[in-house]
Image: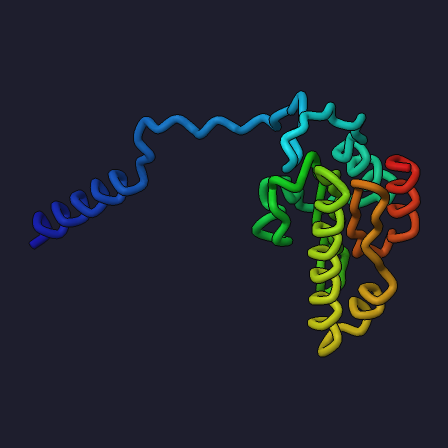
Length: 180
């Protein structure tokens, strides 16, 4: 009986090791952001891109200025799944969520849209997100509700920003200074 149990345990360990083994798979290469030389609007005319603001650098400065160290980046490729923003409308973006003690994470999303029509659509989607936060917060988190009611989506040409944060005034000011 002991031999049988020993053999069964050895077989179980062997199966566990086989199941845990990842094989010789190489990790997927990380994607580099694609830099476009030209933009082609729907009309077919090719135009040079406008000199853009480095939104990632702006985000880093905002995080530093606000003293936010515990945050999660929201990569540009996730804007569609998180905010419903079509990737074709985005030239560049920088976004993060930060837990600061409230029921809802602070959310900052900055987008350089492909054109003003895309910027209007992006703004509408970010407004819908802010409205959804306010609607959810209304039932159980008065602090987040008040914050959502005091925050707006900011539009400046092709630049759009959602600033649902306790640092709203400072971040909006930095955003407007950078893109204006």
